[in-house]
Amino acid sequence: MILQLILGRTESKTISLNLHVFLDDVTNLMAPFFFIPKSHKYGSAPSKLDTDTTSYPLWIVDQQNVKTFVKENGIVSAHGKAGTL
Image 1: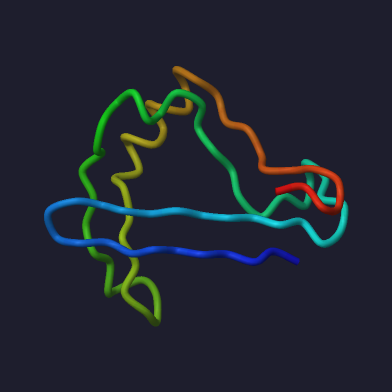
Image 2: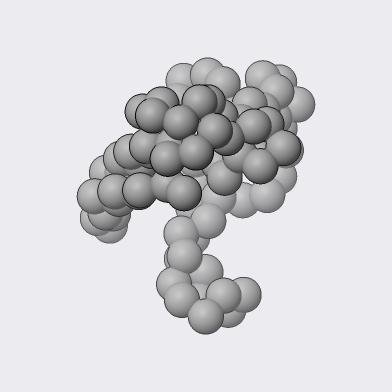
């Protein structure tokens, strides 16, 4: 189980914080989030508000950009022992 805090998004600038507290051990196979190392060095990726493919509005990044970032830097899971922050 994960507690998540998202601060929000403005039109001119994205401000987001995810805080994860693992209440149980989380392995690579059951990790709830994945990250692309060094992706912050690319700056802001073009995004759009998707209101068509989900039942709620969701900001998404172009799939081709994600594929390029993953190819260059790989992808890692958020995992750890219970109590990991």
